[in-house]
Image (cartoon, rainbow, N blue to C red; front, side):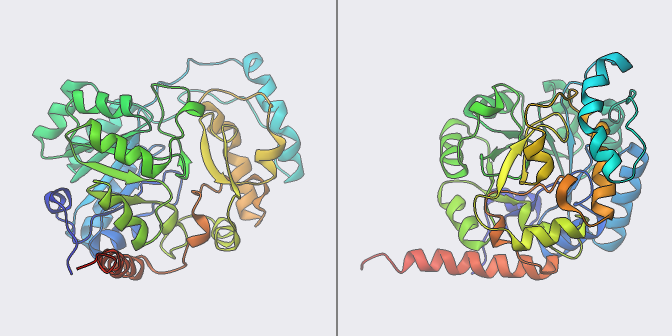
Length: 361
C-alpha cells in the first residue's frame, strides 16, 4: 500500500510526513538530508541561523540528495533594545545557576537579539527550497505572492481557527494545525497562548472544516497510528518533531536524548523562561524553579539563557537544558532517520488496514 495525498504528491514525497523544523540544534543538515532522502520532508529550523550559514547547510544537503527540503523561520516581532537596568531582574534570576556551573556572571544582552528576518527571507528566495514555513506569526500577502512566484510552497503554523483562516486569507498554500500536545514553541500569535491549547485531533478537524487549503497536523504524533488518525480527520500530512529527536542524526544534546527515552507520560510542561515564548519540554529543575521569575521578551531571553543551556548540556546535566518534547514523548525510538521513516510508512499502512478490518461486510 502506497500512502499519498494531493499535498504530498505536490511536494514530491513518498510519505505524507514532515520532519518538524526544530531550531537551536536538533534539525541538523544530517537529519534533514536523511529524512528527505528517505521520502519525507526534511526541514531546517533556521530561526536563529544567519543567512550565509543557511546557504551553507542547504548546499550540504543538496549535495547529498536531490529530494525536496523545507526551511522554517520565526517571524515574531522583536523587542526594542534594553539597557542594563531593564535587564537586571532577568540576569539576577539566572545568576545563581551560572555560578553553579562555573560560568562567569551573565552580562546584559545586546541587539540584535536574532538574525535579521528580511535578510533570512532574501536568502530563502535565493535558495528556493520546496517549502517555507513560518512560526509565531504570518507574512504579508505580497511577500507570500513573491515566494510562491519562485516556486516555493508557503505554510504557516496555527493554534486556533482564526490563525488558520488568517493564513489562508494571506495566500498561504497550507496550514500547520499545531495542537497543544506539540513540543517546542507554541505558534500562537492572535490569542493568549494559554487559551490556545486545543488538542491536535480536535484542532485538526476544526481547521480542516474551516479552510480550503491543505492542513498538516502537528502535535503528539509519534508513529503510524498517529499519522493514520490525522489523515482520517482530513489532514493531508503529519508533522513530527519529537519522534526524530532521538535519531542519531539529530543535534539534540545527549542528555536530552537520554531523558527523552526514559520519560513517562505527563512529564512535559510549558515554560516561557528559556526563550521568552511559551514552549513545551521535558520538565526539569529550571522550569520548576523559574516559575514567577522575571525574564526578558523573546528572543532576548533566549540569549540570556544560551550559555547556561550549553554548559548544562556539555556537563551532562539536564537541569538547565531546554529539552523540548511533546506529550507523546514516551513513544520515542532511537532509530536512524531512514529506518524511522520506513517504520512510519509500514505502521501507517497497518493502521489503515486495521481500521478497515473493523468494517462489517
